Image (tube, rainbow, N blue to C red):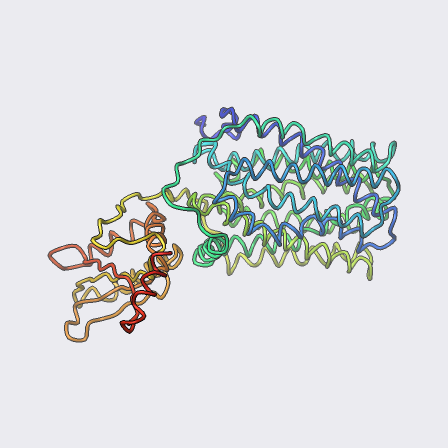
Length: 542
């Protein structure tokens, strides 16, 4: 097998290797903290729903704030955003440690702290995941995503068991203190990292416009939409095992915090195996088959966990659940990254996280409530049915094949020299493009224009329309608006190599002697003479 296909190939990149190792240490502390929080909640509250809400409170901020974090990560220095997030989580972790040490923790205060840590995670994750594509070659990206999952699950396989020992011997406050100390390795690494930042030729997008651009891009990308739907279904159904694991350990197999840590470790060990198998699975099966295998593997695990009274048997099926977890989530993440250009990748990833973690948060509440009412066994069995339904979704919304589309910028656009002295914020700008189309080519032209419309709107155009000349029916005019001149330039710079086929097809269908003619216009309202000077002053201010 070529070296590029090795699952460890990204480790040849020093930056990725060092940050991966520092993240490993930070994740190790985070898992110990999670064990402490989950077991503390099981100790101070008799409600199964409150226990399940510990996971939901960590997942909910990712659902709520990831889109905003993605917009920030696409427009600002990602290293600084990660440092800001890590500092915030460090302060929250220290405060949680002190409150636990002095016995001030109540169930709702504990949920507040885990929610705040989730907020830091929501800010950090889009910047970190988008940075991976900047560190490693594109062909190594699937392996790098799997290695990130594997790194987290290496800590999951060992950290929870150690966390269980810490909680059992020294209490939850000690587990929280270990997590607070785990941030220092990542602090040091991020301070030393000097990423190669591309030179910006255009001003940053306004925050609101950046968020809208991300939402628009994803909504106009059908393949990404399928990933988001399946990610939500996966998070909703499979969250039952992790959210109810403290109850599985305590009530179904009659264990304590150490048993809980060992079971969580089994889940993590299975995830490591899943990460190492990913490359081989992708060579043998298509994306949809892997997704269905992951849903089915979880369903088997939930069914056995619901009926087992043996910690050994439950731990064995959690290996399958862990492998299924990484198989699915790394597949979803990689598909989004390979389908998205760099200018919007953090926003696309943040929307993927929003839907997936939104599913996890909703599922944690649903299965916790079900466990409160009918018991953990019933909740796990019900979730197994939901997992099978998630696999069946592939019959209608099959995942796209894991293709490495060339979504690098096309870089064919040159800003034209204009006789008018336009400012960057001058506008609105109206674009008209004239095509000459033979009668026999009209059906193919209209089909190609349907794809053209999607690309235009996805990249920021508005009020797109296609018109036919009544007096000269061979002439068709494509028209669209952008709010300002700088947005028109930005719109054209977003075109990718993958989009070039559509433009080439239109040029082939155009039967005129010259290329399709482009008209660039600026809208102007009719103004009475005595108001012209005031209008001119206002435009100059912009």
